[in-house]
Image (cartoon, rainbow, N blue to C red; front, top):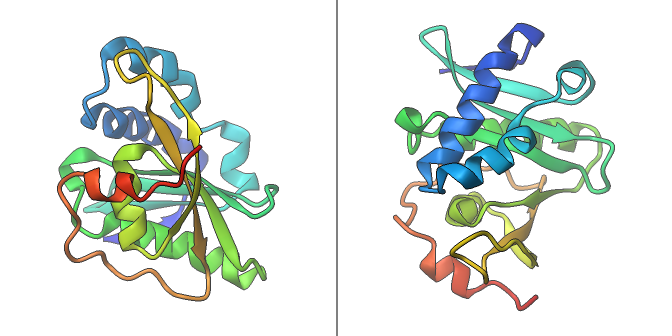
Length: 175
C-alpha cells in the first residue's frame, strides 16, 4: 500500500469509493440517494485541503480529507473500498491526516462519525465528546457520534475491532 496526495483526476474514484463504503453499511438505496451529494468530494478542496489516497497495486483503495478551515480541524472524509476494509488502510489514512494536522500545530481533530465507524475511531484513539441527532427512515433515534482525536498519539493499526458497534454506541453521551 502506498499513501500519496490526491490529485484532481482521482475525483471519480473518490466519489465511487465513498458511495460504495456507505452502501456497505446496509443503508437503504433511497437513503443513499439522499446522501449522494454529501458523499461527493468537491473538486476545489482537492488542492486546498489535505487529501490523501491509499493505493494498492496502482488503484485507489481509500482516501481521507481534512478541513483545515474548521476549528479544530475536521476529518471530512475517510472512506475505504469495502473489499479492502479491515486491512489497515483506514488507520494509515487517519494517521496521515493526524500527522498533517500535528505538523501544523493542531492538537486534536474533530470527527463527525457515521455510527458504523464508531468502533474503528475509538480503536484508533478517538474519544466520544457528544452526538448529534441524525434520524433516518426506520431509525428515528439514530445519532452521529462526535469525536476528538488527539494528534499527539499516533494512530496504530486497530488490531481487533468489534464486528458491530453496540458496545461503543452504549458509551455515547446523551444528546
